[in-house]
Every structure is written in C-alpha cells, then in structure tokens.
Length: 68
Image (cartoon, rainbow, N blue to C red; front, side, top):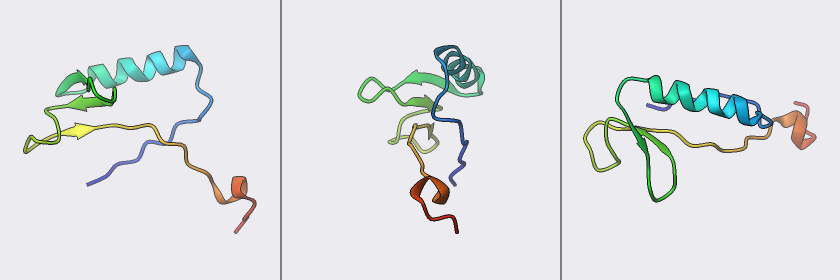
C-alpha cells in the first residue's frame, strides 16, 4: 500500500521541523536511515513490517504547461 502526502515544495525550515516532529510522534518511529536519511517506522526494508518516507518533487500538468 502507498499513501501520498502532498506538501508544498517551498516549506520553511520551521515547517520542515514541524513535519519532523509529526514523523517522530507517529507510532513505530525508529529514526532516520543512516544511508539516505529517509524516516523509518517499525523496521527497515528487510523487516516483515516497515514504513518509510521520501521527499520527491512532483510537477502538475499546469506546471508542465499541459493544462489538461
């Protein structure tokens, strides 16, 4: 299952700090992966149950110039 949380790309340092606090308050929080600094819950990808998050820039059709 995949869940997408869309955040603006221009968050301030304070807002990213607040996102970090939300991550840390979620059940199963274990910390940031040493290799790539992705937040992780419950275990890593080798565990039967794991959750991780990543930040990826997405572009809307309007931003691409395709206002479909």
